[in-house]
Length: 552
Image 1 (cartoon, rainbow, N blue to C red):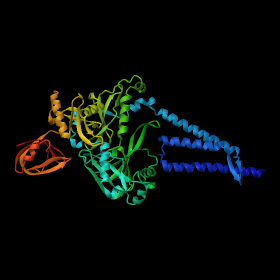
Image 2 (image 1 turned 45 degrees about the vertical axis):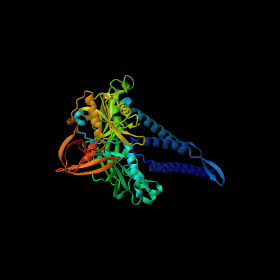
Image 3 (image 1 turned 90 degrees about the vertical axis):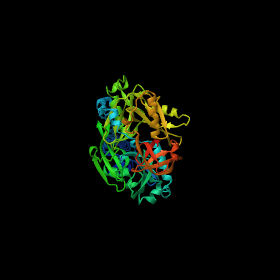
Image 4 (image 1 turned 30 degrees about the vertical axis):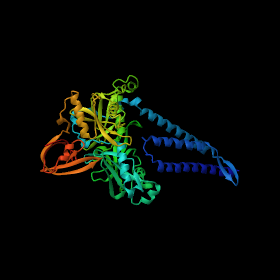
């Protein structure tokens, strides 16, 4: 009898060991698949720990069985072992659950409104001082959706790649050599395509100039082998997790350095308030998409070519903390005195080789007008507030759409430009297929002043005319896009067609500049010949100058 009790006790202990090993194996599988950061600030890790403790508790509470031949018998675990395992697992689950809820509560805005409000430093700045520096070759004329259409079109024209790869959905907005561009890698078209192409990796990425709409496929000498679209050890998230097991990564963006080498910019979260509150960014890990080599930097030490350390969503969230929690948490819910919030969209501006997020600022109790707007640097988190009252962006978009209602075009979320010291909304107008057809400018102070044009320069010219008609003084010298004048003999003239419209390209003697003349606007240009003496008024561009006036 004593021997039988000993065997049952050993079998019970064996089941307990088996349960613990099973939980550990499941935990290992979960870690490999879900890749949680082993960090006290990771809410997911706490949830998993609570779940594991509850599972262990249930295993210990349930009756255990073993088989003898075809018969099933309960296994009696020794009272001491069972009681200890039962109590410990139950206590562990309760403690972890309580710690998680208390940590969540103590990290909330209810107890830390002042600390949340101070996470972002905002300084007031002058509109004409900062925005005056922006010229049209720094303005992204396309939005993400339009860039996606251009990327898909480019991919469809590449017969050698289209069957094996497709365009990824990254389309990161960056400032590449002082030009606003979006970049996105290719990805494997399917798991089978990954098996057949994994040795050489992903061979190219797409670069779209957001000002000129030029779309280019950049082929790499060596393919990208570390991406979110790879599997096992080459999967980017698994690669990063095994190298940095404690790092809590935020958005991971695709960027290229000044030499065009593709990198993954991996921002590392920092929780400044309690266990789970006050999220900002403390570090940046750069992962070479080709070699997998990783370098870890503090935010302030990261290379200057990086553009997206802070996501636009994080920046707008931080500004909302700053604007809404000015007088505490209760005021943000009840009285809402002086509470400011961002509007329901944002866009990007390239300024001095950095990308800035633009969004309007409105009172939390009103949705009819803006009290100002902010620019937020995606690399440094520097934030500038401009106190300018006017129409909210939605109103400006509706006004621009009304101007072309017969065409059914839809407006993109606008940017704020400085046209003759007048704050002006600028936006693209797209057709039903998502292609940009026109551009619009809307005066912020008076959104009834709306101008449209087939080109940016034509739109600006019409807008200036409307401002003068409405008694607003204009000075082309203030905007940085004023018309210039040149005279000389025509050295060479050639004809071309752009989007179905005929253009003449003129080169004058003593100048290497190319002047673009739209025949639909300057019909008398068809009479010009080489050797003619002419005077041109034009706006400077990156590759050619757009002619606004011709005289002999």
